[in-house]
Length: 259
Image (cartoon, rainbow, N blue to C red; front, side, top):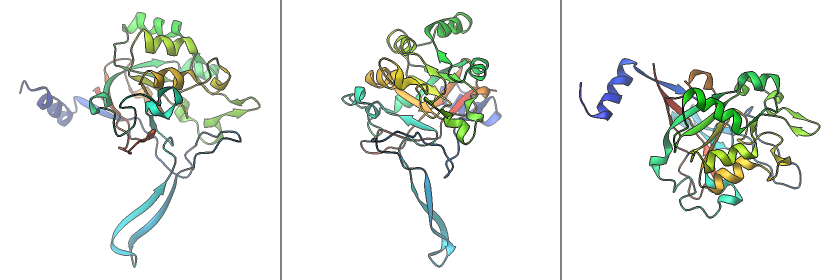
């Protein structure tokens, strides 16, 4: 076998020794979108209009126009998405260095906790307990919260109640710990956004967005199939669309794992 690492990867993919897991949800008109109360401007839902489909408008080809907000479905949050990251160098989807779009992943399984408490908050203690079993989170790795939320559909996915949406996410101290003491690449979740549903009540509000993007880190939301990943050892491929000045985009997140 070749000693070249890329040749070894190609061979491992061909033999099935390395498996690719799709962590993305399909996009459709039914894809849930974060709702903001007035007076804030809403994000448009996904829509698709046929240009031609082997018909008089184009007899030999099929294609569509699509429209949506940048943060629709499984999507990537770039640093400039949040006011705290607006001055980050290389903080837009077209300027992020490509080597930052492939990184290892640490998957924290909190599905049992999230089933019992839909508003579960991931704490520093939870992360340190995970590290006691799986080792320290390496610098430059993604931290992914496995909650089982991706199996929810319709209104249950947003899970809005009298006090607003209720969904799991990290607490303030956890986010600061991951950024300042673990130097992570970013935080990913199965929910519609990287922050907990009630994070608008935190101090500061929306800490995952505030601290992650303020430090030039990334977010991944509406992930799926995290139950197929090991706690460590997966490689995430996370390129957003190369939108000039983009704050994020839908993306097809892939994970490479040993079979």
